[in-house]
Length: 338
Image (cartoon, rainbow, N blue to C red; front, side):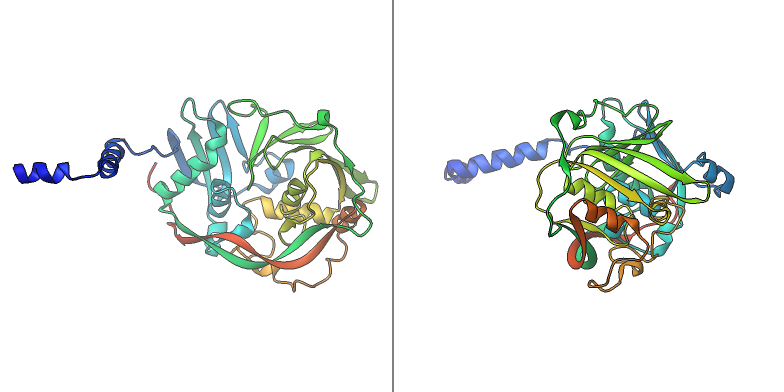
């Protein structure tokens, strides 16, 4: 007993403090993971083409009164949502894009809907055995830069900026579309679609309208207010163009932006966003085959978006840059039982 007492007495105050701190940490319970209160996962039924054309197909993500309803979502898309990534930032087997599921989940009381992606991370790990690691890979991109003639956009006034998001879940009539930088709330209106991107680096308000008819090809006009260049690059990366867009303008302000999309542009967005369709170009993400055109290649012919971007005093320059990607190491094709 004496020898043990001598050893303790010889410990320095720093050593004693270290051991006390370690003992305190060991005594504390591990931080709880964000997880749904309950979640049901079922394989999706084949989509009815008529329902898809009518806009009634069960293919959206909705949040209402603390519940999440996802229809016909591929595992590939679910991983993108869970980790707030774009498809080009995820590298995994092709079957992830064809394995579609319907998911209903309950958000725990007191947990914000903003934490839905993190709860999906837990769901993927626990129900599908997901294992991932981070990496970096050179990929063809478009650099969004200021044109030689300078910026031709009008800066937004403070009152045109979107209000801060309300606490809790989005409105019952809204559709939540998580992005790499934050959540987007799309509210459908009789005049088109109004999209709100509340707060953070990705912010602004969008109004989408369609014109055409009587033999004229349909065109989509998008107006955005309170828009940063990071937001514009994010929006262009949703499939409007054939490769990721990186903001390299150096512009820190918020602007009024108006662009026209051709029918082809709109179709490309649909192909990249609807989970039951293959992402543009196929391939496994993180630099797939559809993006392997030479970095110095010219812009695609017939695409109106390049002209619209030039009208803003900006350019989309093809380059090759290293981008961070998420690599899927392991994942089961079927979830554990509900």
